[in-house]
Length: 405
Image (cartoon, one colour):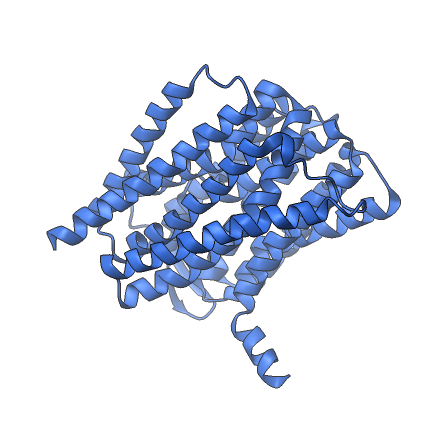
């Protein structure tokens, strides 16, 4: 028992990552049982927007903060004054504009703009708080900061299931109040635990040039990670999105969890010893794992359909869609390994080239598929090609760099 407690403490930050992902997974399943098809579709696009803000809400400048800031002593962070001003400006502008665009073009939830704005401001702030504590090596606090809203949402979903409440507007209202309270508490905790010393040694132009690489990388990842749901919502409506989102939840979650773990673990391993031979061996292993997982997920889904207490998973009518989701999951596992090696051993030139090539590939594939989105199946296929192109580009650039050495 003592060894188990020690192990849990040692890996508590990763445990929080798992619990956060699991909370979203269970919430998506619970609300499928509670909400009407249209309401579930609205929930799907709202939670997707939250996840997008959580990764892209500061336009990559939080990565610049990580790179140029230094911890002089525990709890004391030295950073650039201009960067903090830029971060604050982006936080306000992105939240204001992003919330407006989301409400105007994608959401049919009957709520005032203020609810969307407050939620967006809070989630974007969590991203900065997470990186500040991460820089301070407070890994448990940083992961708790990033995942706390996910723990809040699972409790809210269980309450709605218990009371059988089918009201998406009420769900968003309560969630907004919750994340705002958490945001205020986090802001107080940040000021109490961390002290910032400001200096001015970078110009606004230098900061923007430094951030450009991170912006392009995050932009492409965010696009291929989330925009399929916005396309489905825009082209086929809330109900179609709800079904697409639910199937993606079932067939993507295990892969996303393993992908996060692979990136978390292998980056460190590749820093110590990274080679193409070692990479190829791990790629073979992870492809076998991906195929086995796909079979097990399908079998598990068939078993779930036998229990009336859980939402029905319509595999038979969505065979190709399920196949595309599983294939995308396997490709993303490959990408996680390639990305880990590139992050650990990649030269700046290699990373820059890979990001630029990925942006071009996305534009070409998007141009080919533009006008072909006649069904959700075509959307899923396009995004499968997006991920394949990214994995191939990362593989090409890694092989090129290692062969030049």
